[in-house]
Length: 68
Image (cartoon, rainbow, N blue to C red; front, side):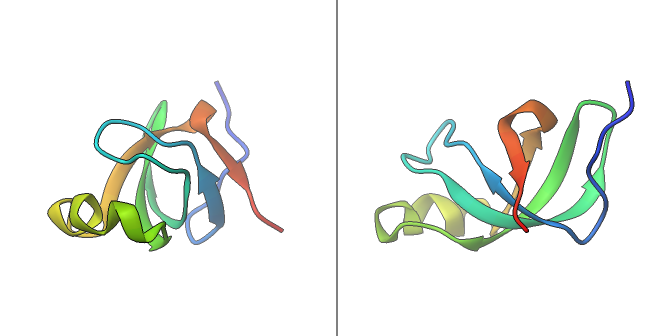
């Protein structure tokens, strides 16, 4: 499966787990079906969860979209 994502791209990711809102991030590393994303923008309500994750999460490729 080839993916359309590249390291350094800005993406919009769907909420999951402890995060209650969608968030924006930057791709740091790409795996087979997921990517390591550093969280750039998020809702204030998710601040504690984002800090617990050290502002980095693994996101499924199908749960993110490129931002132009």
